[in-house]
Image (cartoon, rainbow, N blue to C red):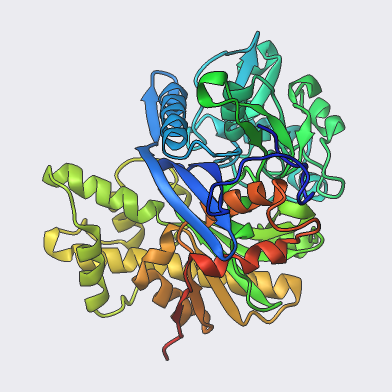
Length: 483
């Protein structure tokens, strides 16, 4: 099996199914669940088939919160095997996941389970880094908003770093397991705090100033490059770099409808911002805590991280533990939509809400209220949704002001696009229309970048050409602002 080089149409002997449709596999790992999808691309066709879905989340060990990477790897491997069983003509595999977390390797083996970004150990890393390099200087160099779990802070709190030969971010770690090659895909590398915001290369001087050995930073690759191939028992299929930060893949599939469109990629987190040709690293952007992360084709994702549906999912999880039974979330949201809008909200980005635990109790404390009983749950859910929407609205307004753009539409993609209450609240609080969908934007973006690398869209297909294909996945649902 061979594939064409990125952007080269018609060169190569990659297999094509009898109906002219070509297939790839997308591994899409989120902070609460993961999935393996088959993506099919052809003339007028862009389709996804889910072949595996599995849970993911933090696990508590004696030394803190971790990811169960072996379980995750087992799910990915089984999912790829099932994908190849269903579609033997799969030509490549692409992997995306959440950002910032990593595994340390020595002799090809993990030194320990990767820490979860919500583990409290990162606080001492923040102090250590800022004692050496003030945040103002960091922002000028890496363009990233302050988040206490950014990779460079995690490195500064990780005593195992001195033992490591290399470090691999989560999607690169899975790619290493598949191919035996360690790389750092550039969009995800941009979230580590160690990539120069202007050059897109490792800032080795910054790393060494912080006591981070430059030797642990792997070679960088761009979306569309082939990393290696899967093992023979998984078909020896090429593994192609995509926008391995899940938001970078999601933004590929945002059908930006105007030059002044904003986006919200909403799942566990809400990533709210604009796509720009150049970074904005002004003092105003730093003060507003806006970040400049790498996008596919060298675009800049100028955005702000807002705590997203994590607040609702953690609240529902706590209630399910109290009840000893599952909660019907669509029914809860329908009930929430039927109550009057709340008079009081809370700060969705409050640091008290960052860690797993008693979310209803923490939110109630912020509101100065009692924990809700069962009868009060619809109103409590409404308060959560409206508070998230209010945070989205503030981020949209700030993004427009910083970039000197008059935002005229918001594209909301990801799991949050299913939440009609959230979409309508976002339209109401921003005063501009919200176009919701696609839900599976991340997987679609993953598939589109692979398909372009295979030469499916012509020699010079642009990001806009890829987005033009997204309409085949279904038109967005429009929410107009109400007075």
